[in-house]
Length: 86
Ligand SMILES: [Zn+2]
Image 1 (cartoon, rainbow, N blue to C red):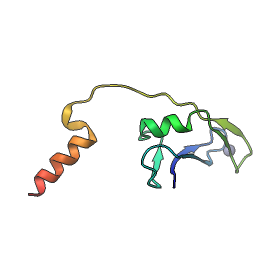
Image 2 (tube, rainbow, N blue to C red; image 1 turned 180 degrees about the vertical axis):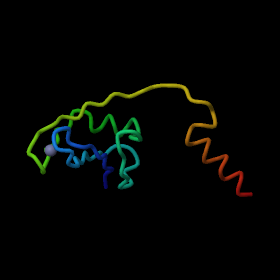
Image 3 (cartoon, helix red, strand yellow; image 1 turned 45 degrees about the horizontal axis):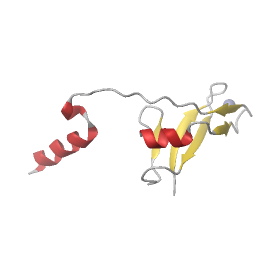
Image 4 (cartoon, rainbow, N blue to C red; image 1 turned 30 degrees about the vertical axis):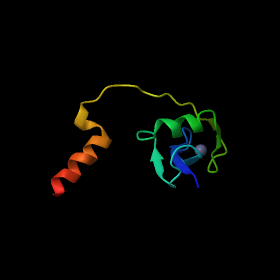
């Protein structure tokens, strides 16, 4: 099992699939805006080949560390959602 991160070729816009064997490996699909840090770390430096135009790319990741308001974090948001159900 693996997770997939979808990127798009900067030359032709074709889809590029980076596979990660880090983290939960739930066959999840991520795009560049929602990649978990462990998955991003795993695909960092991967070489990808665009099957549409033949261009080659290397994945370079940058992790953003920041504070968000407590209830904005997905783990707390899930808690507050389930509270609403009862
Ligand atoms: Zn391409």
